[in-house]
Length: 522
Image 1 (cartoon, rainbow, N blue to C red):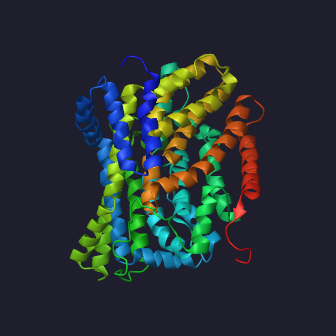
Image 2: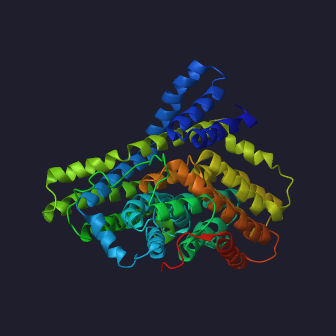
Image 3: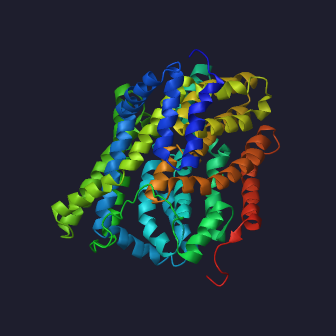
């Protein structure tokens, strides 16, 4: 297919629409992949079916980075299974319960823990969800609300963290475009300067805090929260949770205490940071570069560090449980296998989501969306329009990194050509690509992080998407109007845009939201 056509929108839209209508994510994703293969095969259904499996699905599995994510996720799921069986999750829950004595504090604790696990969006969802679920269940916080808070502090945090699995990719995209355009600026410095302009992830973090503090909700989330609080139904009738990490051994947990949770989790954190540093510094020295923080982080292989960390966490969890006499080795391995099994459905969905993403790349779905806006627009509107395009592409394809990879070489040169030397437009455009990419990663039903948030929170995936999407749209609209558009027009700077947007979101929550609980509850 030489040029992008409108038909390239069919596979992602079909997958999204069917997943909401049929509530069968696996089937919907496969139909989307098949539709993409059918278009590439010129309408031959037999060839399309065969290539759906041997080209797209097999290709997704054969990708080294994808394999690393699968292995990392399975091992981390196994670690969480051991922690749960050994009583670590219960011990941590009991410790946090001292603060999380009511629904407000339970939500705040979940939000704060999400900020703490800033280094990777996958690790964030897989650690925060299973850890906080026993607490939020006891406090009658709906699984939809738990999944929202987990998701709202995953990609939004990782995308702006100065040390994370995202930064190498982001720095690489920035450096590549600046080098191609002949602009001599340090990519890490540009990255730091884009942070105040990334309105969506910053405002989503603020919105999550507002929802927790005010105990007010609106839309489908209000219905879900009232169902959970007033009727004790944590899940909607007919809901099908994506996974149940930590529940495989319900009633059989040992009493390992909080150390059984903190030590393995701390091991994962330490090894990830150490792994990023060691891998990065080895590559920096091999290239003969100066061992600066920027060079080390941009050179490090985050997937390798995540693999090391997840393996270390598993060994630590099983070994600690054995050393403390909490679990026999056989019981520890049984718990580990139980944790990995709970990840299978999510991994199947992930592979199909990656397969659909590959089909969209071959059909040039993103190219069609970008080309549709043309090159006629004034530079001042570029940041806002780029955010909308990035949000649309990432929502349709379910991938943030893929969206960045497609839009950076298309949009950054466009910004440079429309407004040469205008640093404000350039920063705003780069920030809009990064922030818009997070939007889809955060709320698309075919996004890996959205899927993992549903899975880690043991929430029905479609219910998670339906309750979260109105919140995401509100934040995106406010951030686009008062942030990207206003700053692009030169009405005020990014900091003023953030403050005004934060104030408007607070007003929206207060006036549009309704209390979930009786006023008597403290």
